[in-house]
Image (cartoon, rainbow, N blue to C red; front, side, top):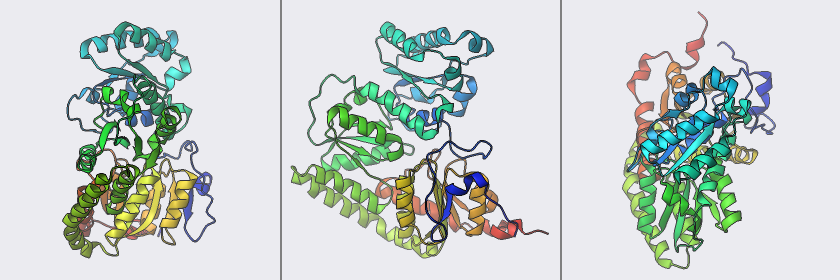
Length: 454
């Protein structure tokens, strides 16, 4: 079989458990030329803020940036869909030479007058950082003229990685949350952070909490509303689902308003149950919440176990590769796949920290490849070497799986079905089962034989 080598500069970001000393390098700028799967700072900020449905989202920069991130998360809304539009100042060569501040102000005033949003976000792109437009002062000027919050997002793409974009988004969100007028806490209330309602997960999770007797003040940012976000400081607890994107905001709210936070996941039976029980224990002054939670979890688990057991019969011993945005999601996926009898042979993320990768190492079996900020060639190499049957990733990983002739499950931006909660676990298992057992793979040259020299 033809050998695929790893770039020397990438050697400290790729490890196999049990074969290498584990001191993974992470949270570093992607290597130029390696065609990393990781996106830029601007893209990171967009995926966090985009689902706020009643806000105007204006990209200050060339039209390509707006095109790249248009409808990037497909986040569902139960009401307004202003977020589904992509607006750009479309900076040209002349604007770059003479500055784009007047164009930004004009665009904001025109769009706010036409669409009447509850707030507006103005995103800075690479070129804006280079030419030095004062986006913040423009936003203040427009806010004074329109009377709605106009928030700058300092997301110049060259400033770091996708994770830095999350931080930029959190700073803009905190600016909005900080405008709340009352500090009085609401009893038995939470904010859900890091849930983006890609396939309707927000509605499932909110329904769980409603049945438990817990009030959801705001969701950041799935099916989000500006007025709800302004009330977020009144919640008693922040529940952080996507820790990579929202922990920064949770820490700021803890420091500013004394709101504690917990990190949870709603993927898989174990993690969903644990998330609901941890919230119930936090409100231990109300024992009815725990009783309702126990009943909810018991009934939900009973309803899906028969179908999971049936699908597991065909999946036992199958091998899976995982490459996702945040490492915390990888933890839940490993647990979910083990529940289906599958083995994880590759696990990686775009934004994991050293602590995340240490946890990942403990969860994985010996020989598992663990990598940070991978590129397509590396992913293909290890999928073939480990003879994987399934690849779980996002839209950029789909072609890799299909070219290698293996099943694929989208666990990121473009999926259409919810994968969170108990029903989400059943949906996930069904999708995995359908793609892994599909007869189409019998017609495709697979695995190592693909690269066998003639």
